Image 1 (cartoon, chains in turn purple, cyan):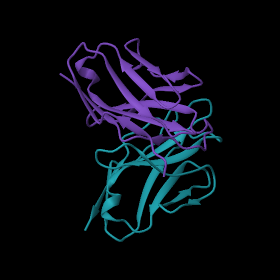
Image 2 (cartoon, rainbow over the protein chains, first blue to last red; image 1 turned 180 degrees about the vertical axis):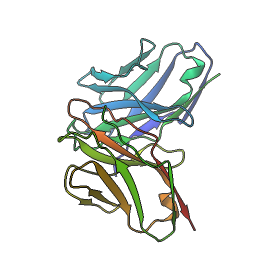
Image 3 (tube, chains in turn blue, purple; image 1 turned 180 degrees about the horizontal axis):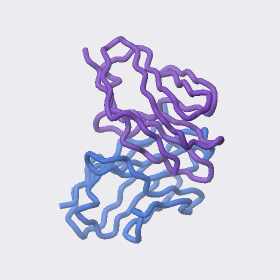
Length: 115
Length: 110
């Protein structure tokens, strides 16, 4: 069964450093998403992306965050200057369409630890 | 954002059916009901979804109340592998995002 792949599984960084989290969505999917989950808390929506543009973003997704689809297969989340509170699991997801009856498929996540 | 209410936790014995309830009294006519689960240290995993009619798939069944203000996820025979947090999510027209609540933590007893 096709799956969303995320790398690395664990990223450790120093506060103030830039990080890039990588995702390979399912190949025929057109819509891409990032979510995050701080330890012990809810899964929170960050951003959705379609046709090389952000479709929707949450209040969390401020100027420190950016997303990109640099080629035909990867989808990345960049955090420009990491803060301690950015420590969380980051999940990438993809879907074929934006139909409400369609399904978002999630990756296993990248654990980001900011020291 | 449309809201859902689920019990914080439930327990079930292995091999027995489990009924996980979800209230969504403010659901609108075009909102879809999706269920996901999150196994420990993993990403959310799709379970089932529906609009008005009851649905079955290889993982579970979804029973939707006639007024659509509540739904129930049914696992027919719980296994230890089904221990997870189960989320009921409403998908609303005009938005692509999933709003996760706190979900129901299902514990399966051997």
